[in-house]
Image 1: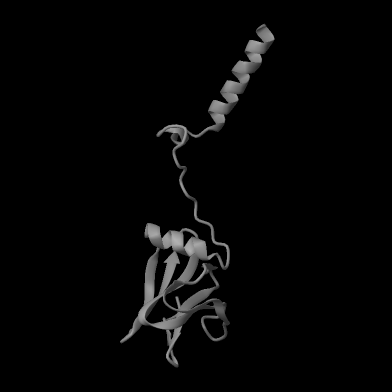
Image 2 (image 1 turned 180 degrees about the vertical axis):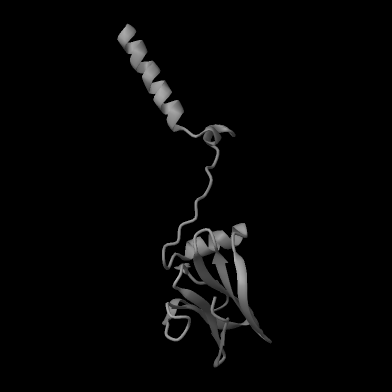
Length: 145
């Protein structure tokens, strides 16, 4: 009986020590904090960060029918693009490791639409990125960031 009590106490101490204090602060079903992760091409991550406002929009290009923006999450060092406009446009992201002299083109291209996000892409040094939208025969790109 003493052995069973000692084992149960050890398990309780282990579980209590391994559980962060904040994990149960709002009850056993409380959501845990979300840690950003940058996995190239993940469009759902871009959508989640946009909904949470977890980004900077350091670059944008606007024209009569629309706007393309480059978004950046500094904690995850991740970039993605968005497009909103009155006319359909194809949205994509370019990424460069030499300041924009050469680049990987059309990463995460999205079909023509009036609202879209690209997937997220690693933008940690040495990378820089830009978002582009092709609408009605015209190409609109943000500056590199």
